[in-house]
Length: 192
Image (tube, rainbow, N blue to C red; front, side):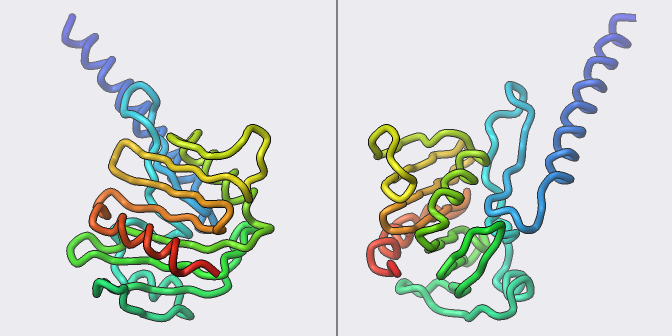
């Protein structure tokens, strides 16, 4: 009789987790700026970033080209494949440029995007809604998003950087550790 009670609890827990994952999958839209895998708080941990503009971390260059056929293939300074999009608008957010970088073995692991000044507030709002308050923030209380700098360190190794003054956002995927320096260099050198 006792094992039957334990089995019932395990089944109920599995139903809750499966339902949460299904709800997260159903609620995501291809137009979402940052897609987040929602997990049951307290059971499986905090949310983590899974994609940017419907391009998932780990996707191949080929998949990204199919998703956005008007982009162009480039080579990063250290030799990695990069896919660049110009002048894209999603959910009322306008990006002058978006670059996806790929590692040899882990697919897409870095996205860098330069947004227009009028999109600053929407970008920051979407990031906070998706992954919560920043781990670090550099702005005076009441500052506008265009004056805000923020960093999120997420539990699965992802890192999100928002730089309002430079109109720049970068998301390093869980396998993108080697690309962190490239995000910093691009932010400094490739501003619009």
